[in-house]
Amino acid sequence: MRYSGFKVFTEGLTGNKGWKPVWRDPEPKSEYDIVLIGGGGHGLSTAYYLAKNHGLKNIAVLEKGYIGSGNIGRNTTIVRANYFLPGNSEFYSHSLKLWENLEAELNYNVMHSQRGLINLFHSDGQRDAFARRGNAMINQGDDAILLDREGVRQHLPYLDFDNIRFPVYGALFHPRGGTARHDAVAWGYARGADMRGVDLIQNCEVTGIDIEGGQVRGVRTSRGVIRAKKVAMVAAGRSGQVAAMAGMRLPIESHILQAFVTEGLKPVIHHVVSFGMGHFYISQSDKGGLVFGGDLDFYSSYAQRGNLPMKEHVMEAAMTLMPMIGKARVLRSWGGVMDMSPDGSPIIDKTHIDGLFVNCGWNYGGFKAVPASGWAYAHLIATGEPHETAKRYRLDRFRTGRGIMDEEGTGSQHNLH
Amino acid sequence: MLTLQCPYCGVDAEETELTAGGEAHLKRETVGASDDDFEGYLFMRENPKGLHFERWRHSYGCGKWFLAARDTNTLEVFGTYPAQSKEPPKDLRDKISAKRPGWSWREFK
Ligand SMILES: Cc1cc2nc3c(=O)[nH]c(=O)nc-3n(C[C@H](O)[C@H](O)[C@H](O)COP(=O)(O)OP(=O)(O)OC[C@H]3O[C@@H](n4cnc5c(N)ncnc54)[C@H](O)[C@@H]3O)c2cc1C
Ligand SMILES: [Zn+2]
Image (spheres, each protein chain N blue to C red):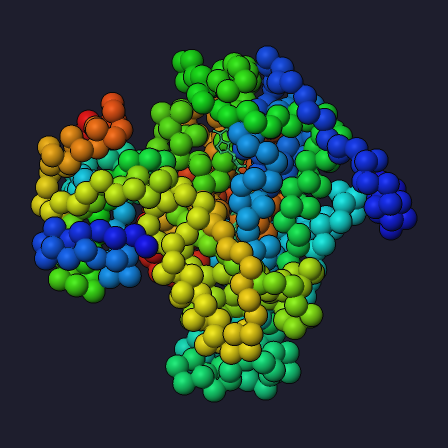
């Protein structure tokens, strides 16, 4: 055992000088079998499963900043498997099963808490849509319970049930949904990958991708040239720029999503509550802060910070749903760069360049996907074949029009998700 | 607050009055286009970190579509111009060159 209450206590008394780094800080080698571009959640889990599931050794993760600096450390930590469409349904179902065993798998406390996700509805039409979604979830082998108004009241007595615009009609309850500590997920996978021999190379920005005769040869980085037999892009919001290094354009637009946290409070919100009509959702962290968010700022941005109108909108939605929140004080807000795809679903695929792979298009929902995405991407990179759970995440679906997965049903076009 | 001047009604419009419409100067493909060109038109995007030419609509104002040059990283606005433009106007391109020497974006520079 590496960590214990006793160790925390003794370290606290001795100035916390006894802690050791949990992964190495290696110099990049001149050549690897596999190079992953991006050390976010997906890059780290991919590296971990390449080593663990496929027994591969000579792997590097190149991260331009530090591990955890991207969206893996910026999201609002919701983990759920409430998807509807074939393609998404089996993938997120697989991911949730991996989450349920993740702490044992990594021997790391990722604070996965299945506190239940409650998706509210406010009309008969929405009730029908949620009933249908719930049935699809149950068919997939996951859990869903349709709650009526009184059922919601038992869980969430503090809502404004008779709000004039959005009276609460009921909710779809997904008991296995919940949250996890996002940094710990990155650290757990990072340590696990490092222990299996993966080189995690931080402060190493990829600036070019070398291709000869249609075959990838390696990458150029801020720390020199690194040759590689396979190169896998996994740069989330920066995917467009990384793909441009290989002369590719992607069906991706990068947008800002903001999040907010209040000062720490005693336990008050015991679930993840999602108020779709107000583009608002909320949960309470184990530290006590209310963590909540809303919609995109809706214009292309790499700024990692959002603008005021969306802040105002989110606060208004919060007050509409749960007036008690007016007593809480917002402590911080931040933003992350989202890789938005036209149909709102991700891409895990090969490219037209031999040995070059792409993983992107996670929109607002890539945190819960971290385990299954790494699992499927590792499978694709190692075997050359798509994994069963991710075979519909094809790059060419926009070109052919076949297999588009528009979960929200808003249309398969940029700016609609 | 992002503020863009509507080139039609002249109002300095705040982002709450506006709707973003994505990348500008897309070449509209139609019957007979190759799959590549059609996919490019509908889905593939430059998605640059930096200078971006984009479409906006003055939705809660005069209702017109217009175009803007903006930096997606610093959020700096270089200027706006009418939607009917085939390319960014010369004075706007010069203004961008003064701040971003050597810039290029698709076929424009
Ligand atoms: C505010 C907010 C709330 C969210 N809430 C949720 C949620 O509740 N539930 C959920 O499931 N999802 C949520 N998401 C989405 C989720 O966080 C992302 O989809 C997911 O983290 C993206 O994958 P990643 O972890 O690999 O990305 P990142 O952590 O962003 O990893 C990409 C990495 O690539 C690196 N990189 C980029 N370019 C280069 C280069 N040239 N060279 C080297 N490295 C490079 C970056 O520095 C970065 O570290 C949220 C996102 C945000 C911003
Ligand atoms: Zn106007």
